[in-house]
Image (cartoon, rainbow over all chains, first blue to last red):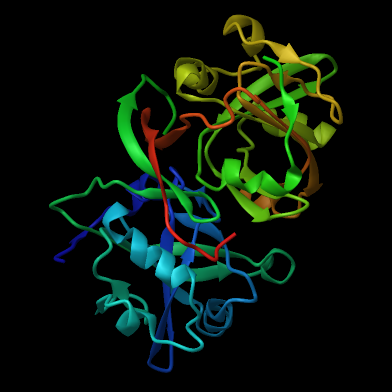
Length: 178
Length: 178
């Protein structure tokens, strides 16, 4: 999928609605993917994102060691792969190969983008003060990419236990909110 | 709206999908409402929620002083009031009166529930270590309520600048994820 650079100032609009995302990491040439929904924006620009990565996950170890990751945004068409990545561990399988996902080189960080995702946010860990107590990492998005042909996609949102809400219609209301 | 007690262990399913919520606070008999989307679950049970409340908001001062709030979940029918609350400041108006919202007594905290919201989560601030640097507060949900007649509602999700995605269909995929 050919991607275009996406303005960092607009990144919040991708994550603020609360979609399920796929976090890619890599260490010593071994890439991994984790499915997660526990994330929040913390600042508009530079975009800061807080996310919870359980210390029980293989990703926790990689991220703690490398301080780099990519937040990838899947649309509803990728739902089965999103769940497959959530149901398995990178300790035992190569998720890119097993689930037929395509790694693409990032420009500012080591881990690969997931090419099939419609947006990719290259991130560096900037604060781990809450990692020990809450598994909470603060990431700065240093580079963002989007599919220029379909920048608005139907995201999926986890309601728990494998039930997902698929993004519906959009409405606009006059708002002073950013 | 007559509410029923909702299990704390299920609270994550209300917030994990990333809906816009309305935070009610109160100090010295004066209640306020803030619209916010920057929140994340941090723990299943007891449910911990992290949320960003800008120090520029009136709510920041109240929450810092009282350490209590209610997270209220509006469905799409309340969209205009959600935006109205986001477009105004409690320093100059009483949002409950101005926007015709009904305060209902909470059971464990001082601030009122917003009766028109289909779910209400009574919260206490349990960690403010990140409040000064990131405006990030960690809340524990101590009591949860839901409308038993319509527990599943069409939530709204902010895409930025007053554009909202309305919750669409739900799908289920076999998942080991909680």
